[in-house]
Length: 315
Image (cartoon, rainbow, N blue to C red; front, side, top):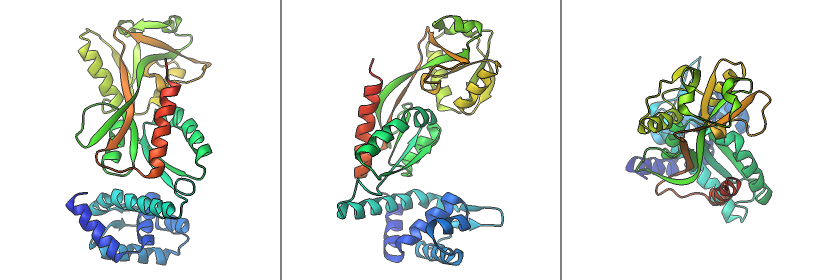
């Protein structure tokens, strides 16, 4: 915790009520005073008083409210991760003291790649809730870069992300290798074989993710290191991998994407083909902030996540 965080913690612990913190988070999460008031079972004037009292305790305006939007000020945006962490830790501590921690109303917060959140997390959470009923989850399905920032800023306890460039403030634990594959319609000429070299994609309109995407960075770096003179026609660019599958279904082109992002069961229209020479993979793993302490519930879920992931991806 840096000096600024310590100052905020000291000021808040001595000048606020716990409901003030929850009110602050609710307003920003709903982007609405009315919706936040309903969620907290407060009247709108009572909620406004809570926010005003909290701002006075901190000594700065935290929320901008106009006729068109409700948004955090720069200080409010900086304060959000710390407030969320304090609320989560407080609730966890109270539950632990009453010997209910880990079984009732505790919460696990994490940031996950959308592909992992869609295809893998649900069954792990289902298994976890069977063993520890009542634990809530707050899952932020974010892009790779956004997910790393959420972990680093303390908005979540840990994340599932691509393991890319090293960051001194984050710790990575590898889980699996996820190869890039070709997705095309079953009636496409490239679907006639089980594997293809990258050179076979030349001349075909390709659907790829944005240059700002972590997946695209992994792909471009690997192909550059392979030192092949490939003339790939990236004709369509999308922000989400799921969008590329929609374009494939209509026959607009073929897409290169991680295997985890492709249909996990037999699809009536889309076929996947291994890409070789070179084989390009992205490393997926757990991302945690160095020095951060996980809540008891998060520790248990992390352990199950690692065990379940390795178990479901054994060769």
